[in-house]
Length: 210
Image (tube, rainbow, N blue to C red; front, side, top):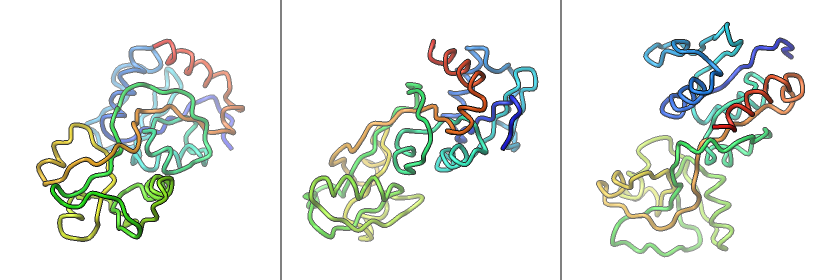
């Protein structure tokens, strides 16, 4: 276990990482020019502020934090719930808004029934959602082009993130129901919250003041 005072931050590649760095810059947590989003580097060390950023896949942020490779991280609420990782959920950062929705083929039978097939990147959330409605479903885990699955008959519905809904519309799909609304959350490793309590508390207070 690391005992140094450097704070290791796991960020999801893409817009959430950019928004987080913008916030950290505004609050003086890090300095300009440390993180280069055009670089292929995966780690960036701000020695002046003793903070290190690591770029990882969105789905992996909570894993890095849970196992202590990162002290804190930023991840969407949707991913946090799907992973069910044992981490602290410190703050709702307010950006990265999206909706996790059920969608199906337009003009098809959009009623729920037992044993239907749902394609998604979120099998746990999907099964729990439909179980709450008394409907038991089979899930197929896909990592991309999820909209294609009901069109070609692989699934009856999909569960996926939706922002504007334009991708669904262009592929002949319609939203059926919103499962949950998601924003970016600042999470923390439970052990490091004690070891590096003062540093983490300072960051939380500064971010919360935003």
